[in-house]
Length: 137
Image 1 (cartoon, rainbow, N blue to C red):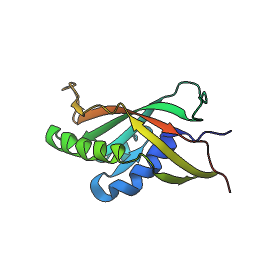
Image 2: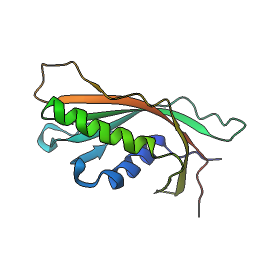
Image 3: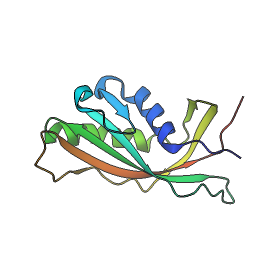
């Protein structure tokens, strides 16, 4: 049984879903020369993939929207939050096959970042994706 990478699944899904709402969806912040806002950075806390009786793998993801001002960061984070909640039941074509998001749970509300020592502002939230094993061709 091979489980898909939750970060790859979320990044691929949200790139298609968000369109022009964000300039970039990635798993790490871009370098200073490539930094355009608003952008979405998705990081993951991956416990070891341990199939359970439902044959699902759970991963907690952290979604951070970075923008030039706090209202934009908050607004875009709310839009992203809605798309993450809508991922349940979605199938996503990734390298090696089709990933299926069984369940999305424990999604927190977006909260504004508190670092005022930077030029950009952020808003972030987290959620858990439960993924089915990868379906390969």
